[in-house]
Image (cartoon, rainbow, N blue to C red; front, side):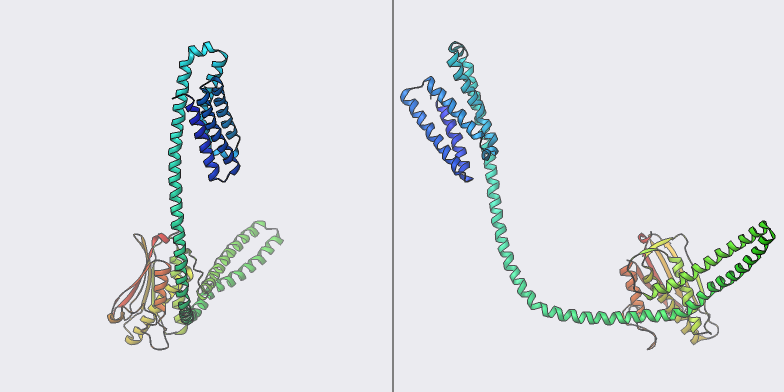
Length: 453
């Protein structure tokens, strides 16, 4: 086979590849020029076959290939075929160099012809290696393109099916809309009724607190008034000492006034905390947990509950005890909600011991206690009373809404159910009861220690 078949094949491959690319990408003008290039290549081969291989045809082949690559490199639309260009560059350069050397220095070319032929052979190997690699990449890309087309087709089918299903869902939704609205209206009315009952329960407990708050707030107010009067007298004495020029005596009085002011500030804060506690109990819960001293909260509500009962019934008397674990510190709680739990349990405890006192009379002394303790990963709060206890037959019902053992008009049956919901759902804890008929009951709260601040 004449060596001229090599440039012919190269020109056909280059022009054919670029022509196909131009056709796929709707580059009509470029496709026409590469078609001309293919026709010229065939014509040149025919010309060479008729007039035999001459130096002139070799130069024409080399210059034709060089012009073909140069023309292609100048087309911005073909830049993505850069590696395809590189495959043919060595062959074109070596062929042109060989023809140039043969024309200018025939003697040197004859002595080095073997090297030129080897260089042309290597450039052909390079060309075919690159073309093989490009072909594999092209097949992989084509495979990926077909895969994407299949995926697009599948997605279109899915989209069509989705539209059909959405239509079916819309029809079904239209059928259910009226039923849903009716159920929502009924549910809203039920929730409104329940909220009113719960708010009534909260306001009832607030009413029981009022007397206790009045008693508790009177003590710090008395201290504030007394220390204010004493401080006023001390200031008069200080003025006298200053008039006498007794600076030392005036300084001593200033120390006493400062001490009195500290006591006024302390008892003022005490009264402020009592008022804030009442406001927290009366308003709706924010639902936000905050660091809370459980011991202080329990002690506060114990005293308020006790004095509230004393204010309503002057004959009532009971022993109340506390046993607080000081190592607990502050725990993240919702203070309004948790305070309602403590108050409700204490009110129930005092109610239980009062009922037993009315039944037994002398010989029985009512006792209510509250304690806190850290146990492993929990904080335990116990509210104990030595009342009549809870009958076993109703022990499983006491946390159910609207269930109560109190006479009609004395309880709504929402207190313990509200406590249970606050402890278990809001604080992630546990509320249970241990009781023995005739001896008393103890309500036990377990809170996860992870709530600790």
